[in-house]
Image (cartoon, rainbow, N blue to C red):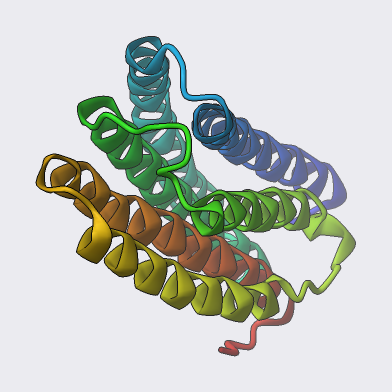
Length: 220
């Protein structure tokens, strides 16, 4: 591949990266809407409609990345490192889309429950904050992929897992003490906590994929 062709191909890789980053920002925006609701439980129906609409954009953006990545592989026949970057960009897109799915699922659950001022455990809010921090850092790590920076985002997942276990214990305790009419709403919080935990898992996976694209080594 001559210098001119190499420069053009790099521009195409940058274009692929920008598509993924745009999708990542859409997913992050939905997560921030969820956190906003957890801290200020108003206008939940409007919140769900916003997240649902943004999720459609996320789905469309995912397939745009897939199509463009496939096109680069077929037309450019990239060398090993470039091939890894294209494949991991597609895999990162899939993980971002799954995080978006978890956020949409959480919004749908919150839309269907009636929660009082003190019924959302602080642990769930902390899980949401930690998950969003991991998501933000994973997006940043991917944005710096051409600089060859190795990240340690996966290490942030263990504290979230511990917090998840604490949250489940807290919710179970609340259910045991709650009057019958509150049990259904509190039970749905178990799935809300699970969605945030899964979102953090996918953010950790994105960090690992970025490192693999850079080094060619798979590490857990």
